Structure formats: structure tokens, C-alpha cells
Length: 305
Image 1 (spheres, rainbow, N blue to C red):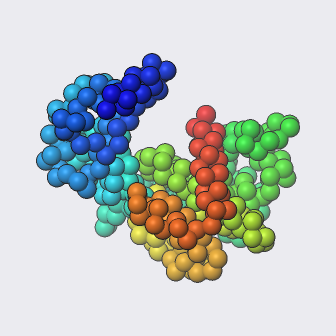
Image 2: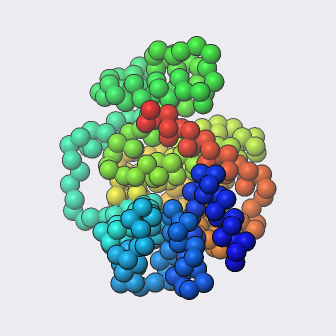
């Protein structure tokens, strides 16, 4: 309608980016194209051949194409090669399992260090010794500790000092995350998803006055270990010598931590499926999830700064 066109013109003049959601090219919608910065296509509504044609015939090279509901690595690779620019979906949170693949020596070393990190009897001296194997890892850990997220008034200069200020388990969780991020060439969104899950589980544990909420953070963090390592979860947990308690939670969804993992995954469902699943979720949990997204974005920035 003329009113819609006028509204888009006003938004463009104010410098806003315009995304056309679930766009279908038709005579009625064609007048919207000159205003679009991003065009979103629900790939379940098209064949791959149709999507490739849409990419080839985009009306302007400046317009970015976003594929949503991308659920497999094959779909992602086909659409990327066709010329799509952005992707939404669960494809990157699934492991790409290759039977018989050998783990490179550098990754094997990281996994051995992660196994030591997950030893409940690990000491501060041992954590410091682990970090001595990778100077950049220690530097990144200290960058996170000194980021505004933690609100420390004085600059922390050592891992020992950081453990005193923030708690040993907090530092151990963050070193674990940084090691996970180094395991393979995975998108940063996967790290963010792990952070969102970890923070959500921790926030709800705090709200429910559950002791040792850091355990809940660890559960959320490791819930994407299979995708990080491109192997099934039992094998991934075996590689890092995960405790029996962690195995039961991550494999069988046992206890409250297991329940929270199921709940946080409902927020990750696409479109209407998420809306339907979230009808049974409390307002407090919805608020915790939103808070977790912001926290994860800030944390990811502090990791890459």
C-alpha cells in the first residue's frame, strides 16, 4: 500500500536497514524490493533449484540474501555456494561426524588439557600449569576477567588473582570454553549458543536457590561439545573424561540441570514451533533467556577483543 511505501522511505532516510521476511516475489511485493537491504527466504518453501535461481537473479548485488530454517550442513553448503550471504538454523549446532577421522595432534593436546580441567580434584597450581601450555589462552582468559562484564575495580594480572576475585570454578569454566572454541573452525554463533545455554541454566539455578550454580553453567557449556568436536556426545564426553554426573545430565537429561537444557532448547526452535513450545515456560524463564542472549553477546566480544 502507499502507506507501507511511505513508511519504508522514512525508515531508509533515517538510516535503518530493511529486511523483507519470508519474501515471495510477486507483482504485489515487487515495489518493496528497492528498499530491501536483506531478503529472507524460508528454504522449506522452495526447492534447492528455485533457491539457486533466486540467488542468481537477485535484483541488486548490494542486497544480502538470508536463508532461514537451514537444518543440515548439506543445505548450508549448497546455499552458500549458490550465493546466499546469511544463514539461520540449527545446522551449525549438529556434529558433522566422520567415521575413522583422526584427531590432529594439536587438538588432541587440547582435549587432554580439557580432561585435566574437568578433574574435580584439580588445583590452582595445575590450572596455571595448563595455561602455561598456551600463552594466548591465558591472555584471553585475563582479558575476559578484566572486561566490564565482571565489574572489577582493579585490573587482574594473574589467573590466581582472578580465581580469588571470581571463584575458581568460574575461571575453570571460561578456560574450558576458550579451549572448546579452539577445537575446530566453528562459527562464533556456536560459541554464543553455548554461552547462552550456560548462562540460562546458571541464572535459573540461582533463582531457584540451587547450590553450586557453576555446575549448571558447566552443563550448558558442554551441551554443544559434540558439535564443537564433530563427534557424537558419548565419544566427546569420553575424550574429556567427563564425570558420571555430567554424563547422566548431558546424555539422559537427568535432574533439574537436564530439565533446564530441554527448556533452553525450546527457545532455539524455529518460528511457530518456538512460540508453541514456550507457552508453558514462565515469564521469569523467558526473561532469563533474553538476559542470557545479551550476556553471551558481550562475553563473545570480550573473548575476541
